[in-house]
Image (cartoon, rainbow over all chains, first blue to last red; front, side, top):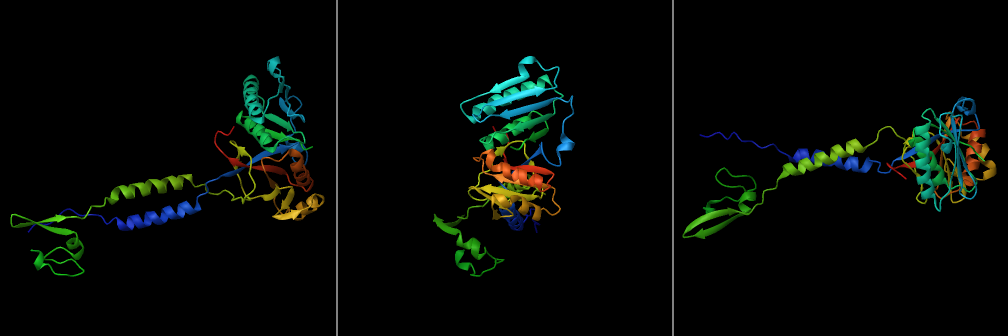
Length: 150
Length: 164
């Protein structure tokens, strides 16, 4: 009499458990992640905590009504003169953001101690463009980003 | 040989079960009957592998501990690559020219009062607005929130890696 030593694992319960797990995860997974942009404001109760020191380098990004962006770096002695005061113009927001990204990375390379930035939007500044500018500033490792209300 | 088969639901010791029998076809060749199985073997191992990979992927992709922020259908949030996961906060919204505090439409002149009333213990506030809005529309929300005593104002944005 031969004993059959081959045996088969019953995979049906495994498949059932995996199917239940899969269905649960598919239903509960958040596909669109919504995050928040933490900004320090130039007004209000947080003002005193985040106000930059007199000698601390600070980046000012000022919007004018025509979509013209002025980028000024103060208190950064080692920064080349060509990067202290710059203007960014462009036919559309995408071009301006692209130019701003290049400029901000160059500024950060020239002044690694720069850690504070303040954005001063104009009334007609597009919200997406404002968020993109702050995004690029944070991407350049300038972590204290502030916004000045009108 | 097929004549000797017993019809039964369960497997028979003396012959194939009803399931197996239904997939057998008798083929006579030179007076010898040959049984040929028509049942296609289903390989379940690869199916289990696929399921396992999907489950692991979904488990990794699932974020735990974040706040689920309800977004209106017509509201398109701005896109940012360096935003952080949100934690529970008070949410205010500007949509189609109307300000919403806790999902209640609020006139601009009552923003401060409404924010003061709904402040509670929260020190931070999340501002949600359409990406096509201009800053002049969002500014009253920021100013009112600061005057109401919120220590930090946050802007809601969609997290997209490598956003331009």
